[in-house]
Length: 530
Image (cartoon, rainbow, N blue to C red; front, top):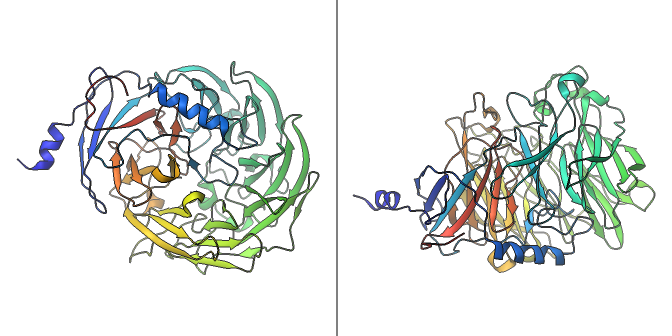
């Protein structure tokens, strides 16, 4: 009997810990071999409470304004969109091998896309907006009991079956003790204890009709002011969800986006600016050299707007910067790493041209650097609706392209903006990847897709006719070494992320409505709790 079969047979679970799945990994790098054993079971996965308290204390000390001091307050951790959750702990071994424990929610959160926390025992799911087949009926917010993953209450925000509006994933943020939810063309303030709607405001949609618009996220500055922008689809198109941006006919008739600045305390509009292009990626904000900026990645140009406390104004002294190469499509959202604004192309649609990671200097827009870290092979198609992740402390960028089938670590020279490939691994994901742990022990967490269909554009994302499965992988961020991997489950909502939770847990929202909890432990753990 070979060693792989022996590992499979002896993948044992912790005594007394009811779970859904258990997986070990080899210590190999590159084309890793995974040995998996699916163990049937049921029961909560509460995580480690000692670690949860440590994570809560860490989050309370973070300087992450304007967001609430909790582990998961903002969709990308911070307004620079780093996706670096330094307070979230990895509970496995960096030397490996490890075991992954999984638990599936008894309740359904159909088309769940985002998670936020308030206290250690206060977790919320935003869903119902997109990313599933059949299309959900409209956005909602649910409070979820950590551990059991049972739904405690649900607040339904809209029903597109009656309104006919275009719907897509907005966001949920933990702000000033409340929940802020942006969805369709409304911004909601929700009581995190009861689920009651404390305030709602309709947002102006500029050149686009309200039924053909939705706001896909927001950002803000340290003074608590928020900025958001809409997506638009061509008039007459009835395609729902994010893929309307690439599947609607007459895409050349798509109206440009509008940016809106809001006071969330009074739920009033400060300023509205009609933009030059349709902005696909979410807004990224920055405080640089004493000024507040918003970066917006258009179809061909990166724009910078200045917020002076009253007005949002195009900064004509900086850019706009034309960033795609011929054949490349638009970037998703920008990220900030010190003096540099970072973009990754090919988020605006599929192409047979390899993507670029582009660094543009915040002080001087004429200084532009780029790297093409994942060259396409003949017949491959590049398309990634998500954006890279950023580790400022280690000067490292993490990028991915499911068409090329790669995830890469890229080193950034903070002085020159020059970039170099640190490592490359075989992994396919459509989704954001997150970083957890302190700078000297960073772990990169994301999904990996398996499918007989090699073109990511042809992956059917919903539970009806879905043609791929997805697992969660944990890698040593310094080397790319695979530390652990879950079993394969149904697909998660594309273009989102796996979510860090208190107690060393990682959560995944699947398109079939199930919320999955995962925890990694060293494989020599034999008893007790997680």
